[in-house]
Amino acid sequence: MTTLAVFRREWIGRRNVFLLALGMGCIQLVGMQFEAEVGKTTLLAVGSGTLLAWVVAALFGATMVGRDLEERRFGFLLNQPLRTGEIFAGKVGAGVGMAVLAAMVLCLPTLLFGGLWRLFSLKQAGQTVGTWLAGSLVCLLLFHAVSIQVRSRSPWLALDLAAWATFAWGVRQLSLRLIGAGTFEAMLHLWLVLLVVVTLGLALAGYLQVAQGRADLQRGHRWVSVTLALSLGLALLVGSAQAAWVLRSKAESLKQQAVSPRIR
Image 1 (tube, one colour):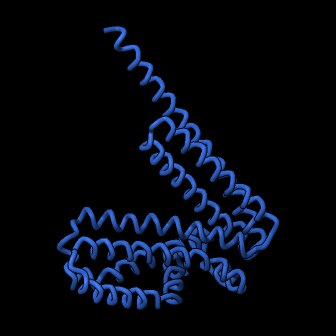
Image 2 (cartoon, helix red, strand yellow; image 1 turned 120 degrees about the vertical axis):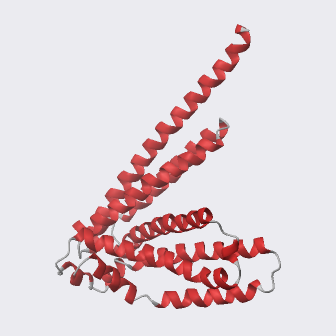
Image 3 (cartoon, one colour; image 1 turned 90 degrees about the vertical axis):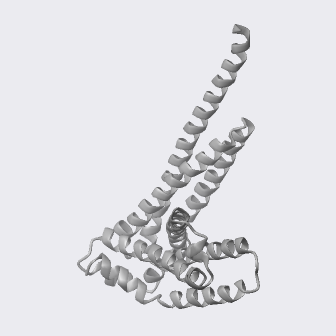
């Protein structure tokens, strides 16, 4: 049994998602006949695909390990000649792949019969698929962690709530500081950096939950809680350092602008 076997096992149990996506795409194609403005139909098709991809990824993440642990089926995978990293990678790959393919299936009727292919350049198509991929990965990892935290019903949930609340407060404070300095673009860059750091933390937490927690839901929750709390703390430290550097650069730039007229 390999990672591809895990991938295939996950897809077989959820293949009805593609039938749902195809049905939604056909309904969307019919709806296009009553909308004359092409821009709106294009936005609707892409928006529907994006929403479906992220919802499928979130639901997949919420059930890919937590449900197996509750139903005591996860031990079957652990007893196979597989590394825990292969199990986790197979499940994550299956979820992200299913989410993106479902979005493509939803857009397929509009793409083929609605003329959407004439409006989309190759670059725009690549950006759209990249958005589906990135968003699906974040949603899957986030809801996997939340699912483990909720299903275990352990005292470690207090650490989870405290970590997320502190992180939200910290992001708000950093954003207000940057907005107050008039560096809105820097704030968006800060959010992107925080998102990357948190996503890496979620991936590490998910892997450790499988590798160290194994079939024990309570122990897996402990690894998720500690890893995620440290990751959120690290994200705030990185964000604080970046915000401090931006504000210092902004102050130096304003000081130079104030000194320049005097020199002249």
